[in-house]
Image 1 (spheres, rainbow, N blue to C red):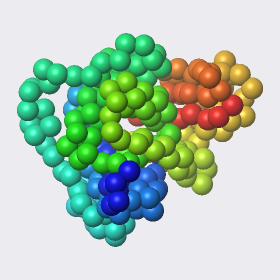
Image 2 (image 1 turned 90 degrees about the horizontal axis):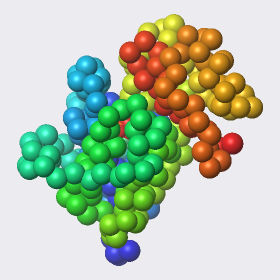
Image 3 (image 1 turned 180 degrees about the vertical axis):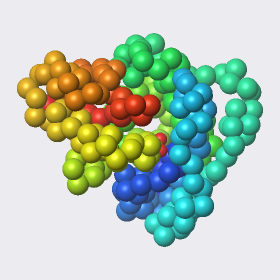
Image 4 (image 1 turned 90 degrees about the vertical axis):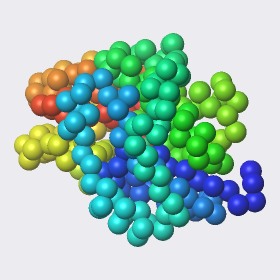
Length: 235
Ligand code: AMP
């Protein structure tokens, strides 16, 4: 590591306490911290989802200033995709499962934008949340596979008081959906089997994308109305 290490926190904005915990971790381990806000169009498989994704740059920038961030990268899509997305990073195994099985091209979009952002910023340490567990694993594997000179740092999931994992998408939930959403984490923790979780959540009106136990982790993606929620716990 360099003498003045640079920490980097890539985000899609609509910042909450989960993002701020990554920033805190970066600030405590680096001399400088840079945050990017970029709603990456390539990782959305549905244009309605992309269009509905919350954006409030003014509020985000205020929060970043308060959090003591040193610089903010706010690129637009033409600056990130100068090649019109002719080049991309594809993983052919784990990225096909779980979220990848339900969201066509999602992880190609994620890995490609993370590679590009890391090459632009060239941080010593880059911070990612365990909330997006499959994403974190794939980014770690990509950094290792390409011998990328960056340390990928994992940060624990930050939750609301009722257990719901904080997410920019939570603000899309109506009051009733928000009350129900806490059952996702509760059920992942409490039910002895993935099948039990599926049945419990389906009974409550969740649409299930998947609930799977993989290598000591239970991962799930569900939908309430148009809002997709993901979470995972240690088992
Ligand atoms: P996003 O803006 O949703 O792309 O998230 C940017 C980064 O923040 C990713 O590394 C996420 O895993 C992380 N993150 C999002 N929500 C949380 C949370 N509740 N706790 C910890 N990290 C999170």
